[in-house]
Length: 476
Ligand code: ADP
Ligand code: MG
Image 1 (cartoon, rainbow, N blue to C red):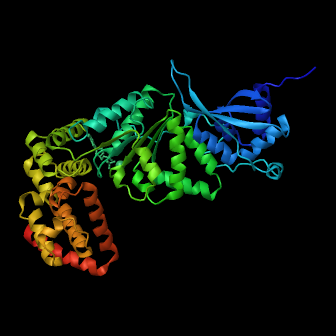
Image 2: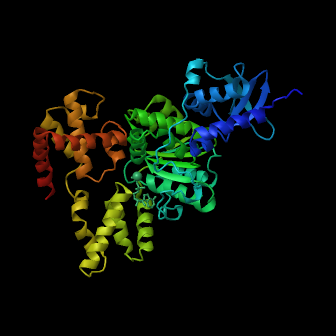
Image 3: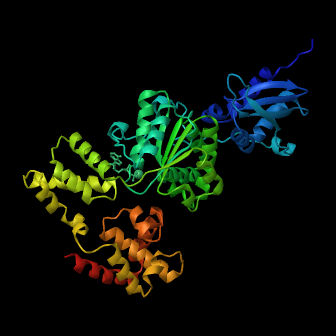
């Protein structure tokens, strides 16, 4: 009697061999989702969930696959992939494209050695149980204590939408950007915490880009990049903070690109933050940047006066501390840079009050915050800084606000921005505006550049100190 082989049986036999040849986690990730669809003329077709999946299989398992196909179907046997390119819906069937496997010489197939025993690392565990995976979220960052204002309305409501329907809104990826201390980390963690409490079966993971890079580098050292990838592919909601940190790290970006594609194609949610808009992210690959723009990009601005008032009130309320309205107003007026600074001021005020056993009143607030709010009442303003710095560097006042990229002018401009940040209460946005309509990330960059130069260049440091005296004497 002639045995008619069918796709399921053949693939089942292949799987037995594959399972014995590779790690459990790799098997689960890469082979369990495969569905055998047909066996015609010794061509076995298997359906894979995405293009990325296909590429990964071809890159990492092609010789193993060749070998098992050879064992099952003989030298005439071939493998073809059917790749889902559109998952379809109730009315439309999923769309697929078919691709053959790579042609590789038989000698390579014959010489195939099963994977070596996988080295243990944090990502590879035979008993990986998603319920025990730690989300790395800070439970105190929630929507309930995230004050809404004009400065964050779009980002917050998009975040809330994503939190309620991760992976199914068009906000995928969701990219939140803004300067330091404006609430990026709080917002994206609030999304994560919300999902965790409403959909506990989902694996939410928060990771800073810095940690992601370090983990990746470590996995390269221990030759366990695949386990690294496998781990991230388990995630349902990936929150990756401060992606500007990936800048210039090409290999990590490549890995992130694959993880991103795979998660995105399988309908998983990706949430990112950055300190500047994607278009200004230097040192990031174009293909990565273009994907960042697939979903929604929303920015956080410095909070306006009313929002600052509300934030102070909320913080005081949750700490059980009462402070008079006029003090709240005074603080909200004086500290207009970012929320983190505002919080710092509040903490120091509370400390002063309890150390000196004094009620918090306007006088105490003024005293306690002298060093921070000086600029509110002094003569050191933007104009004075620009004029003084221009004179010092012997450039014209206008050139500071012009487009020119001449080196000496750029330096003068950066120094002036640095002092504006240091000695006035202008927000980054406002500083940028007063330097010919530059945006806040340019200001951040300038401040950083100057700080770096102060640390590394003695002569430069001396000039800065000389200038500093001019502003300080004016202040006292
Ligand atoms: P970033 O990540 O943008 O540097 P964070 O998210 O760390 O900023 O925010 C700095 C601090 O300000 C945190 O303690 C955060 O809770 C607080 N914060 C920021 N925005 C808000 C807001 N809209 N409402 C309440 N607290 C906020
Ligand atoms: Mg942050």
